[in-house]
Image 1 (cartoon, rainbow, N blue to C red):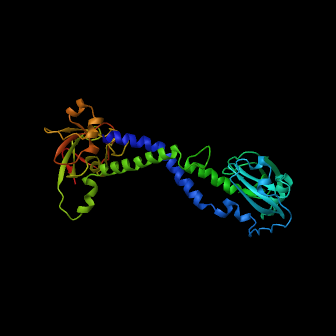
Image 2: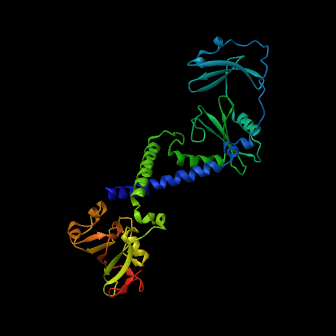
Length: 352
Ligand code: FES
């Protein structure tokens, strides 16, 4: 079970780890960017707009306006735009401005849009191009209706969007915002729209990441053994066991003295006897197989049941990283064991 959990944790971690890294990286970048530059407020004309006074000229009543302009209207308000009284008619999908004197629809021309954008932009740069859009794109999302895009030659590559129907500034975009938007997309994992933070993909990946954290904790606690807590017993009394080693790396039987209760793999390593391993004692690779020579063989752990075939277990093979030193034993070391010259002595001499 633990072996399966380890393998699953490893592979899921590899997949989800990339996104977790992207979350951290994008989160850091989003927090480092200057909000005033990202929003374009840094180069926007500030100051309150004073509403004009409605002239005393004869005006059309709302019910006198052409019916086609009022179809589906949600609200109508009278206001002054650049000195002229207009009705602001709000529809489900946008706003229409109607000349309150003659009932004609007011739209913003390319020339007017350019002037409005220049009045709004306080940065250093000239208008280099103007284009028209009829539907919202990634830069104008959240708005409705047609717009003019006025591009400036400043270092931030500013684009100001002006509504065709109202002449209002819809958005101020620049390269800071574009960088922000790219990392925001990576952060919320809404690749097509860049704005849905409740999308199924991010919810799914977040749930898997939570599972990854929980399984990581389970594996972390499972990886501790008594050997790890020896430092708590510095002044305590310790008992040792004599381990006789036989194997390709030794010159005849050699002995080492290991502390009882310690992990066999780690204790041998502290005596410069390196058993073959890929997982570093993690109970994953099955390489640290040693053969116990004893009348009574130690219990095989659940990891050993998965990594050591039954036939070999019956012959006394166990994983050193899963075994504890309990008493004097004789061990057959596997091929590939690295034994330092002076780590053990031959002919039955033991090392402290
Ligand atoms: S060191 Fe890998 S299983 Fe023991």
